[in-house]
Image (cartoon, rainbow, N blue to C red):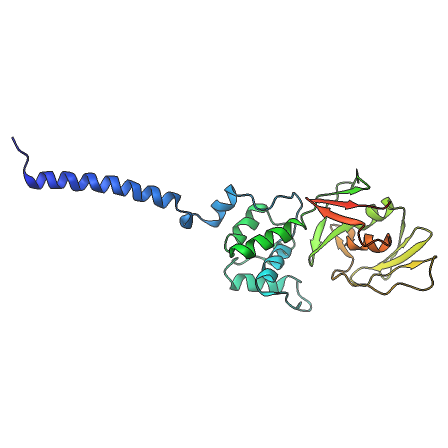
Length: 255
């Protein structure tokens, strides 16, 4: 006995719906445009080095890549103009100021750069990876940092002052006022003041002081310790190539 035409058509239509519908749902589930930034960051590792970087510093690197460096607003957190623009660009939402100085996770970084254009994303990854430093070697031997970590400020890798310069043969003494560190190895002397981006040295082998240098970041207190830009090592050792950063490792060559 033949099935009625209407029943055959209904059976065919339902079969077609379930076949194409399943395919459509499968496509939707695997379509990259439907995957959120956080899901992407969980499966794709963009930042390979193990070092850490503050949230505000990472946002600074992102915004500079997109629209250039911003003038700092006096008496505010240095990252404020970058946080503000990143929010306007739709890269981030509301982020409390106390989080700006805390380290950002790799997943958070990946979620943010997932919203950037390809070439901008690649540039940020390259720049930030160069700042993610988690260990130091001195002439090829690991330097014991006593549990201290590097940090980043204004695009500069910051290292703990006392541990590093004492390993290089310098003595460090402090004047309580005006928060100045005196550094001396018998031949080379310098002084650093917290909050002042002014670096120089005096040598017994020459008359007078070197021209003052600004690295863009003054000596600062971080978790109870004084930190300075890694470039200061080049000045103290009179060698512009004494510091090499590669693969999350800061290499110091002193001989």
